[in-house]
Length: 85
Image (cartoon, rainbow, N blue to C red):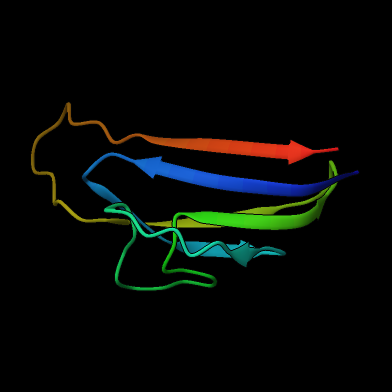
């Protein structure tokens, strides 16, 4: 079990973060990666988990902003997570 964990997500310009469903709270971090449409706990790109364990799960939802009509275009997202045991 670990405590005081944070999750920070960074995306490419073609993706936006709609939100997270899980046992977390918003840290209110605004960025260009945040979508206008919220799913679960949205409106931010960072969340705090008070306690996590190996069985803790969270669903992250993304919105595709740019419609891609050609093949070979890639999207990326980076999960930056920290935890304090």
